[in-house]
Image (cartoon, rainbow, N blue to C red; front, side, top):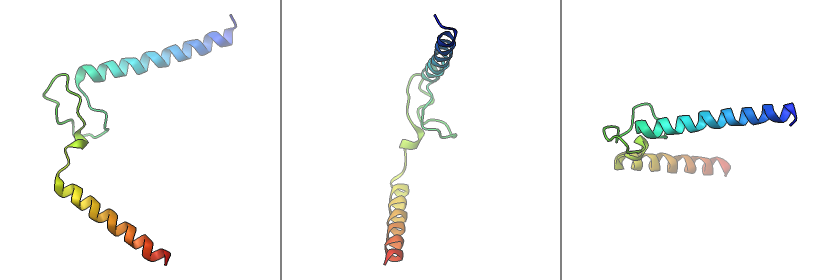
Length: 80
């Protein structure tokens, strides 16, 4: 087998090892995958994987919709 092919295979195997190890650790610790720093809502449950970003309030959702609508309106006015 060619040396270059062996090196490439070792690089792929190493990358796969670290990706799988990180995934197993996240599943065992019950981490969410949404990227927020405040922690997950279901952190007290051992194996639950829930995203902390999914528990938004209705007020926050309404405010986000209002801001998006005002942004769209301002771009329409600028186009005319």
